[in-house]
Length: 241
Image 1 (cartoon, one colour):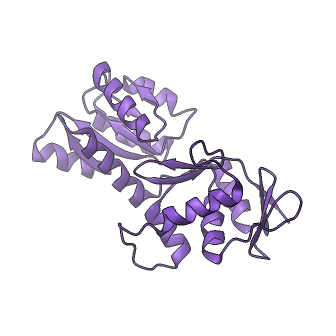
Image 2 (cartoon, rainbow, N blue to C red):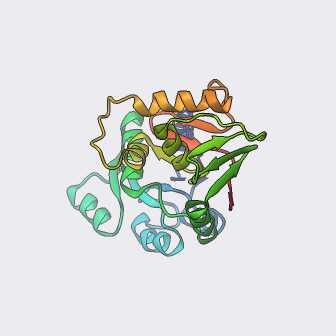
């Protein structure tokens, strides 16, 4: 979510970040931000400090009381003291205006890696807990069977996943509608081995999984690429015995 009273900057950020694969909500005042937080739980908030009705710093505490979103301050205040106060008040990062969109994107990715994309609402946490414990996960006519370490289609035929492909698909299906970075997927599926930013193993495995799921890579319905970040499983999943 972007929070800024500069309409032109809002448009630029929206267009750039949507092209990067993010879903963007916008607010132009502190009151609008707090109102939207009543009905949505963003992963990250880009917060200007100078708003028509609030000082951005005073909003940090209210944001923390309403959600667990990471906050990047995006401000024209560039004094060292301003940055220190912003971070001490609870901001996860501080970016001064003017800035390059590429730097903003890099800051967002770094914060999301540190925070894991933010906490989910309570009902989503319960659903995620069920998925994490279930022996089988059902989605789109497929059955991911943890007991047999295999994926089956609607007719019970196995897709013959390798162990690595199974763990990768399991990680994605267990966190539906949530972006997982390549680093997170590497950590989840490789048992803490060192991640090499040039390692394309995750991308290669995703391509193989899509082929076995018959998920068109040009227009995927199950596994979406979030450019510059990682992947997201976009279908609902159900826990089953």
